[in-house]
Image 1 (cartoon, rainbow, N blue to C red):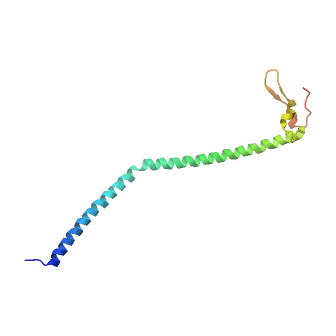
Image 2: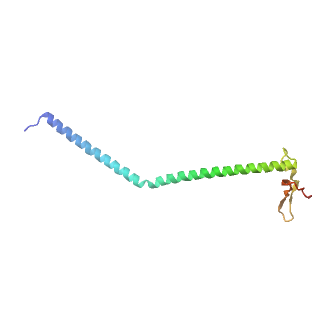
Image 3: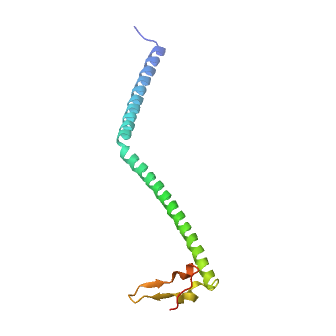
Length: 125
């Protein structure tokens, strides 16, 4: 029994389609296996990235906190310096023009008279 040309062409097309599908199936399944292996083995670098991000966040929060504390302390010290300069009448001249209230004790330690921060008179040196 002889087959017609249409039937032969149809069988060839079906064989070509089947070969193409088998080839694609191998590519897809091979790719899926590679992706699955990548996902299973990728927890280490993902953990490293997450740890780095967490570390950066902690650093930013710490920097912000310390910057705020330093700014607050500078504000407090500026107010204290203004009070001292106002008390000694050195406003605008700087505190260095009136350092006569600083002295060294006999044991070599620096002695600063606390009278400049209060209304008590400073003792003579």
